Length: 312
Image 1 (tube, rainbow, N blue to C red):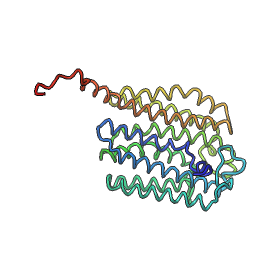
Image 2: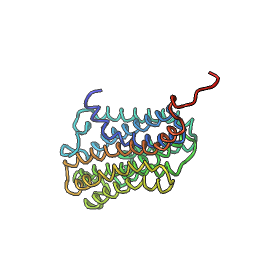
Image 3: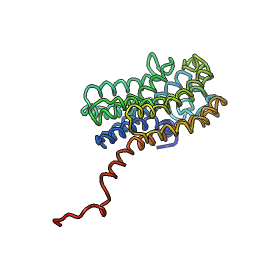
C-alpha cells in the first residue's frame, strides 16, 4: 500500500473502531462466552466500516468544499490530488462491500437484532458526509459517533458472543462513546473556521468555541465515571477503576490544551485523545477480567502443590 492510501484510511483514527470491540469481547470473556472467530469478525467489520467512512469523508468533504488547501489537519488525498476522486469513491464502496459481506456471517449468528445494528451502521457511515442529509454537516455527527462507537458497538459485540443483551455492556459502551465524541470535538474545534466557511454545521459551528471546549471537558469526565457506575451497579469488578484513573490523569493536560489552543496545535491534542481511548479500552478489558484471573489462580493451585493421584 502506498503512502497516499495510508493517509486516506487515517490509521490513527482506527482505535475508535477497535476499542468498543475489545471491551465487548472482554465482557464476554468474563462470562466464559468469548468466541474468537466472531470477535475477529466484529473487529474486521468495525475496521472495514470505519475505513470506508474515512474514505467517504475524504471524498465528500473535498466535493462539498469542507477540505481546502488551507485546512489545518493532515493532508486529505482527494482535495490535494494525491488520489483521484473516482478511486477514493471506489475504495470507499469496496470497504462498505467488505463490511456487508462480514455482516452476513454475523447475521447467521445473531439474527434480526444484528441485522438492524449492522444495516443501520453501514447506512450511518455512508450518510455521515454523504447523501441528501449528511449527519456531519447537520450537527448530528457527535450523536452518530457516540451511538455507533459506544453502546451499539460494545453491546452488539457482547450480544453476538452471548446471544443475550447485557445492561452492563450497554453502560460500558458509554466510555468509548464519550471518548469518540471527545476525539470528534477536538477535530471540529480545530476546523471551526474552515467548517463555517464551507457551511458545515457542526455543533461547534452552531454553538461556538466555548461550547466545544465545555463539550470536550464533559465527555472526558463522563468517560471516567462510566467504570465507577459499573462498580456501584455490580458491587464487583473494582479493578476496572484503573480505566477511570487513566482518564483522570489525562484530563488536566488535555483540557488545558483544548481551552488554551486553537487551530493546528490541536492536532497533538487530537492524537493524545485517540491514544487515551486505546489505553482506556485496554485497561477496562484487563480490569474487568482481573476477578476472573484471581479466582482461577485461587481455585487452581500450581501443579507442584496439587495432591498426587493415588492410582498413578
